[in-house]
Length: 524
Image (cartoon, rainbow, N blue to C red):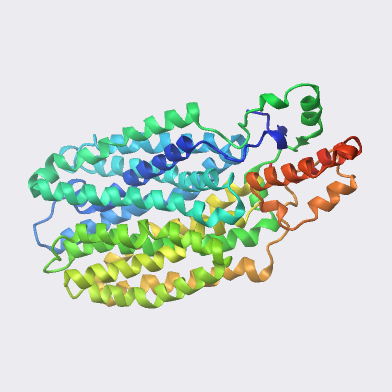
């Protein structure tokens, strides 16, 4: 990998196909497995409450209190997500997207596997609860950097006109991982007795965390990065060496964390720290808490609650998210699409909870399906919107900070808050989570939009030896260059080369190379 002080990008070396299909698949699979491991805790929270907390008489109010404590430990991981976002985001902006992604996967594999080996409260007392919390905190560091790393890794080499679709794929992978965790929880409850599940059955799903290490090793060895681009043999020789020398871009060493908090970036950071709150709280209430609410808190419980939850998640979100992302590409108004779906979710979320509380399995499924559809049309464009708010050199760090702060505030503790509201005030008040975070999130969409996005290229340390050239000035003045993807830059370079006539090739070659150099300045 190239030094941070001097990074080379060659227009002729960027392949139009981007990264190989196998690397994309493996990267998405890493996301699936990581979110499977992360979600397991939520779907086994009732069992964890019984295993890692002081025993209480069956049917007493203490069992609900232990469940709420279990949800608090579930939420503690989200407090570490901003720290993980800073660490992994810094690595990604400083040392490459692939390096960040592989490290985040390793960080998830270790604590998840260890959770399956922890002693119980009956064996070592409160020490078991402390060890459980430590493992969960490490998981939070991992997942705090993983989704932004996977997101940027996936979309940066795609045309910006397709960022909505490709940006939704990490969300789909996360939902597939959550769905697998849900199915695992439902299957274990179906084939094991309650005693078997509490005694040893809960450990089995956590041992699968070791699979993430395999994916991480593959990505480390075979994965490609933005700067890992092969040189075509047909363009070797003296002419290619001259083009490489002319296309060299010098970058001042900069600290992505320091640059992310500069004045020009603060409105975008504020907006991206508020807007995902509805997605975070809505998802964990709708598809983690509601499953346990239907199974454990309702009296009588809804039969096959976990399977109802699984089908709602599959049909309402997993299949719909890429469609929503693609629609946002076609209509070109991500903010408008998110505003409409956000307002509808804010108003209909509490109503859906009341309908579910009636105990009818069919209406419970339809209510969860509606929640999933509204969340999909809010979350589908969300990832592309996050990426578009920041320039490439601080994109991963900034997106990680904003996204993880919102999840630390709104996402992780939503199940615990919903449980407390239900126990103390009833199901009608649990729906206030949608109202509060929905209202804040929709307003957050317009902070950066209304008050200006700032200069995404200022104070990033990017300089160029040919900065006095007229052609460089004309290219860099374009307002859209800062967010162009590698594919779009490659197309620009190709068009510039092919449109030069043979009779004037000697006089225009320098201009073409200078134009290519400047076009690629904004992607480093």
